[in-house]
Image (cartoon, rainbow, N blue to C red):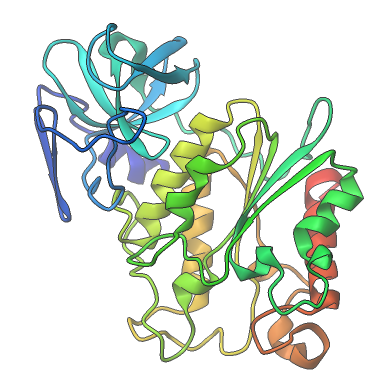
Length: 330
C-alpha cells in the first residue's frame, strides 16, 4: 500500500495553481462561500482532487485566508496531517481542515509520512475518559426499548468513562449524496473528547436492492464516494484530536450481507475500505466484520431485531468486543 500511495504523492505542489478533479475544481484564487463565523467553507463533495498529502513539520497557525492578518481557525501541531488542495503562489498552501478550506505557510509542511500501525496495541488515555460516539442507527440504539443499552453505553460503563457524547443518527451514511453524513457531522463534535468511536458504513452499503454509496477508489478526495469520505474524515479527525484515540469499526455482518447492492458492491468491500484508509492515516480499526462471535447473520433471532439492528444482547456483544480490543490484551 505504501508503494501505492507513493504514486499519489508525486508532483507535490510543483507550481500548480488549480487542481481539477472529477467533481469540480478548487482553485487557489477562486472565491468560496463563507460560513456564519466568517470562515471560508468548502463542500466536501467539491474537494475531489488532490495534489499532495502533507505532514506538519512545526506547530503552525491555520488561517481562513492567506496571510497572518486573516482570521485564525486553529492550530496544527507537528506530526499532524493535512491535505493540500491548492496554493496561492506567494508562500501559502490551501488545505482541507476539519471540513473547510484553510491556509498554512508552505514552510510549515513536508511530504506525508504514513504512521505506524496502532491496531495491535492497547489504548493509553491519561486522566478521565471522554467518549464521542459517531455513527448511524446502531450507535443511536434504534429498535432498543432502552437506548442506554446501546453499544457506546456498554463501552462507557466498562471503561468507567466520565463523559459519553452520542452522535448516532438513524439512516446516516459516511459519504455519498445522503443528508446528515458522518463526513458533515464530525466537525460539530465536542473537542475535549479523548476517545472517538466511529461506527458507520452499513447504510453506505445499503443492502440488496438499494443503491448505496459509490465505493470509489483509494486516494479519492470527494465526499461523493465512500473512499473519499473516509479519506477526508480521517484526516479531519486527526486534526481535531491531536492527542485523542480515534477508533473506526467495520460494520457487523447482518442479513443479506453477501448480496450486492444495486451499484454492485457487497458489505465486505465497504469494510475493506475502512481498513485500507485507516492504515494510511494511522488510525486504529476494530474489525467487527471479521470478529469471531459477531456474525449476526447466522443467528438473527438471537442477536438482531429486524435482520439489521442488534437487540440488547447484540449490543452487549459489540460493546464487550470493542472494550476488549481497546483496553485488554487484543
